Amino acid sequence: MRKRIISLLTAAAIVVSFTGCTPQGSAGNSSENKETQASQAKTEEESQTIKIGAVYPLTGTSAETGNQTINTLKAMAELINHEYDIDYPFAKTQGLPNLGNAKIEIIAADSQGNPEVGATEAERLITEENVTGLIGCDASGVTKTASAVAEKYGIPFINAESSSPTLTERGLKYFFRTGPTDATFVEDTFNYMDLYRKEAGFENVAIIADEAEAGVNFKKLCEAAAGNHGYNIVQSITYPGNPTGLTSEVLKLKDAKPDVVLIYALTAEAILYTNTCKDLDFSPKATFTARGGFVATEYFDTCGKDVDYIFTANAWSMDLANTKPYLTEINNLAKKFSNHDMTGNTARAAQGFLIFADAINRAGSTDADAIVKALEETDMNEEYLIVPWTGVTFDESHQNTQATGIITQIQNQAYVTVYPDSAKSAESIIPVPAWSERD
Image (cartoon, rainbow, N blue to C red; front, side, top):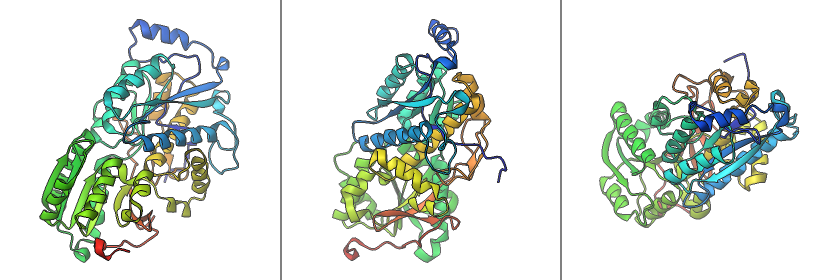
């Protein structure tokens, strides 16, 4: 464990900029950049507010998750901007101390879950709202296009939730991912499955995912991991985005008789899948999800007790507060803004924001390259992390090498941690009861 603890409090996956400043960056030879540099020549004393651009789906099928994320980010900005009696970095002071106690303002933009719209909104935040950094965007496909725009303008971009491994394989200077990739989550899942392989009779697996980039990558990773761990793949299918039904797909899974189903789905799809499984009486020994819609509050609200027994390779569970009391207070603050407990999605966003804010404070500047340098020098241990990672350090691709996951299971309509043992708060229920055996 590192001896040096760097304060986190500020800004994951968001964007930062002083009010009235224009972003600067890699498009250094353009007239846009010259105007940007001139605008940012204003002294920090003249600025009192840091703008952070947050691109999330505020309308469409993932709107509930997007709006909860924006509200959680606003709660984290509140934590930084005002004094709170919470044992957490920056909570007991106002603003960012190395920037004259500057406050942070979240500027929200609606991607609609559409990669093209996300890119357009990212550019608007940069050129019209004058943000210094960006955070987003939930879906990997949207993050891909929006971060490409940020790279063009030389704007730091923090990504906290998107898990497609390809995002950090593009050689970008201004893009940083604070959370785990699907490769990590999938490996965690198979390591957990190995523990129960003989006891539960796990041998045959089926994979189902949507046709979007994140779903396709998840499917490939699961296929590779199944081979590496010696499992039989009895079915591997994709379905189109925004499906009106999943009956044919679930019937294919049922006919294949898998012991385990591995699924990637957004919120509306997760609801549709669960309802269809119940209607068709399909209940494998275990179902493992890739977070997404399965951690959204809308999923729980809509499906009620039918959500029970689902496993998820996760990044958050409220029972983590058993060992970190400040998590309860931070969750309560987030809940005041979003009306919901933090989820795996919003907790990762909050963490990314705080990491970003910490880097901006250490940089002591809104200069893009100074912020990038501070991010590259980040070296945090786990003491003040919201999520269950071992720390935060970025490799050459700007991926956090210490971002890890946990395995959670829904029991009594709430996620509890079942793996690893160091974070475990409940025993796993395997095999899961058939639909006819449930209350």
